[in-house]
Picture 1 (cartoon, one colour):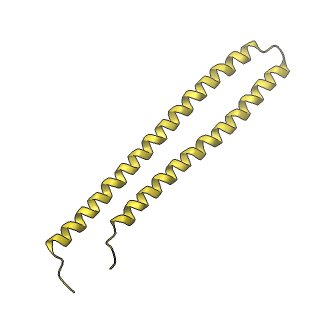
Picture 2 (cartoon, rainbow, N blue to C red):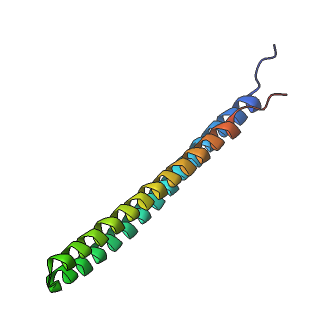
Picture 3 (cartoon, rainbow, N blue to C red):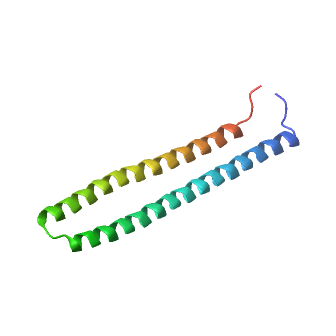
Length: 110
């Protein structure tokens, strides 16, 4: 078996460092996207809570209170499911990008 040359070793080292940098970039981008999703969800949740609070204060019957509460709970459940689905998709996409970087960093079999 032939001894690795300096060029071969440098190429392997560069490939590893490049993969590490691309993985870092993918993780950072995924984290930033998750934060954006969290901020959007928090802003929407706050607006919904304020609107619901106003509706509750003007309710004039138990039936109206029940309707407002039921609508608010159903909407929150739906939004929560969408929120977690979106976060999962971002995490899965980030993981796929990291795995792609790892695969590309492997030496080519020839």
